[in-house]
Amino acid sequence: MPKLLVYLSFIVCLGASYLIIPPTQKEFFNQILIWLIPVLEVSIVIVVVYSIIKSIIRYKGNNKSKENDFLEIARISLEPKLGNGFVLGAILTELSVFYYSIVVWFRKPTVIENEKVYSYHKTSQIKTIVIVFLILITLEGILFHFLIQLWSDVAAWIFTILNIYALLYMIGLYNSVRFLPHIIYFDKLIIRLGYQSNIELDIRNIESIQTAKKQGGIGEKIPKETYYAMLNMDSPQYEIFLKEPALMKSSYGRKKYVKTVVFRTDEPIKMVDEINSNIKSLSKG
Image (cartoon, rainbow, N blue to C red; front, side, top):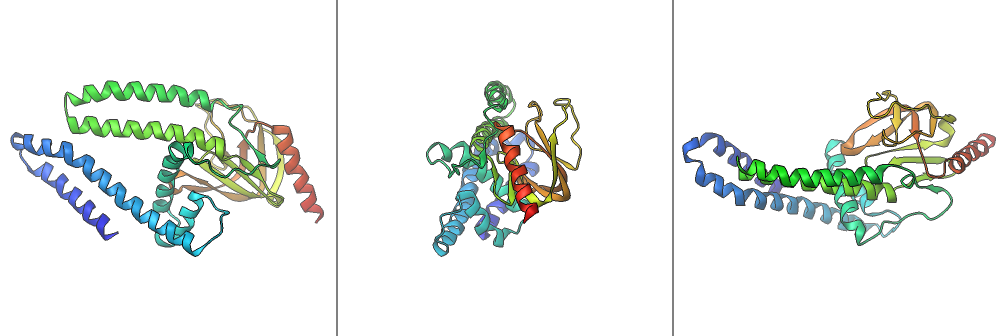
């Protein structure tokens, strides 16, 4: 972490220098920034990633269990250092983007293969939406890079880097929806929307499951106490009503308590029957 502080201090000094140097004398300084900013960005990323990898390797060395995947190991190993707030959430979100947009093409995550795992991407519009956004982001990135470059080379490359990140985010989102399904355990239910959000429910806490009301689309305002585990473009199938509020977690460490969960799945009848069966079994026990 001290190395990271040194890098951050250097960046602050660069920013101060940019503000202090008169406009008439900034030409040489701007040429330096064109090459220096990418080097600094890469260096900071390397330092952060190296620290994360060290923590993960140390955790795996002390814990031989293979039940947890890479991201879960990252969370467990970093939580004692970073706490369970925004910083940890932000790092895990960025790791998820990297993992599901790049790593997953070479190393598939562990997927539970049984009747209690339910996908939700096959009948969703997410694939179409991701393809459309990828095309738009690419065209926008190329066009605006050349337009902004007429004003500032530095700003143009910063904009391009942000566009590349947006591409990775969309690719990662689609892959995470494929590899992070809904899961039903005997006494627990996990509902997800890729790496963007998820909720873990105690099945004993489920009051009822009803057919969801039709939503008004993109402009529809979602109630604060509802977790909408799907794209606004998709039609909701079922709504879970809870006895007590449950904690919903989303990207960048955001959390809130909800009392209802709206979701969809590729096998709606089978999934709801499974949940109701577990509710009845637990109520008898």
